[in-house]
Length: 247
Ligand SMILES: [Zn+2]
Image 1 (cartoon, helix red, strand yellow):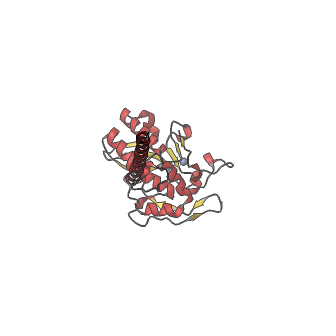
Image 2: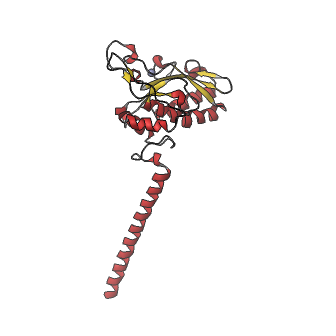
Image 3: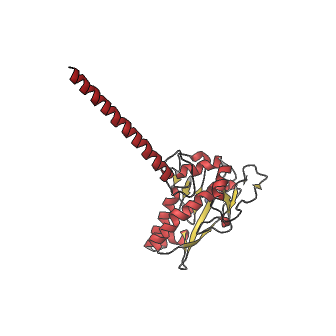
């Protein structure tokens, strides 16, 4: 009897030891993963140096509630002082205090001399680097040297109506991208090339739209409606954590 009991105790201790070892292994594996791939976890801090992960879009949207944190993040990837002066408007729904001058960002392609709210600038940095550049290499065999756009800040309501919700453009939290200038001299526009471009050009435009959906709270493309036939509407919405529109 005594030896049976001793055998049970040893087996229990062994089992406990295995569980403890697995727990320790799991914990150290988790710590290694969180250190090497912080973008894979929802609770790690966003860094613009990291690649895009499944929670990057939510973290970018959350920056709308943390303007100082956003400005610090963008400052890390800026060539020069990139803060734009605040803009106020007699209409209280309009204006912004977290403007970023995109020309100062180290993104290639650059949207040029354009000011957007900080979360848009942060998302554009990742979109240009991790979506647009690889898609251009894959589908077009070249680089994108510039974006063409229809602007960001615009004190207006949705679709320019006289009443109803204000557009995200009213606070520079949206940017309309109309096309891409390529290093080989081509100029792609959404209006002409979304349906009219070569197969590769159409694939490029759809891939960069799909990639934008991972980053921006709202991505509206020519697939959505006629009002967006000539541009991608890319917008951030701080209350949109856990929610996004991709059309
Ligand atoms: Zn727009």
